[in-house]
Length: 267
Image (cartoon, rainbow, N blue to C red; front, side):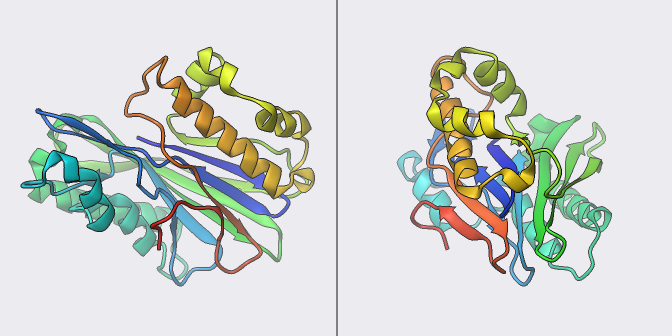
């Protein structure tokens, strides 16, 4: 899974993500904290994509367990829903429906040829994909998303297609992807609330309209939430873990998203 936060500000969208990846086999479970979960879309201005859930399959045959994280950092996965999403989003004029359709087709093709890789997810949710965009002329930000599920007959479908638009006069809020229920129940309304400090409170208490929400305090707010969620997992385990460095980009006036906080090793 993952934890990605999106916050609309006067400067554009703040997008923040943790770095943890949990990989399990019948014999072992490895946690890696070196994964980049926000991807810029090459050739498309002011756009990033991200995916939460079970959207990546790695070829790990013959890889020593103590080398798994190194392998993940330096090799492409067998199947990567986020890479497919980014590539599909490059299509000129591609609508959310078009993008979802292409992601579904690519996912279905992979599962048809590698059914064992998703055997434990039959009849269940696979992953959620999202695109965050900003239009500097209208000052409109948007987040488009959809979920991909795997049927009991191995059919793949896209559900919950949604587009949320944000204008400066709108109320400022927080949109959560991935471990949203965990964040609500274990952090905001659970023991993890003790880990939410001054950075969280300062921005939370000042949240009025987007035109009054500054990017840097919003970025600090996002870091505080993700780090609190990470610390909470030692008290209340999450489904797949939350942790590692927090990466943050601002999708705003600059043609390319600004990396406000980015761990080393990212292209």
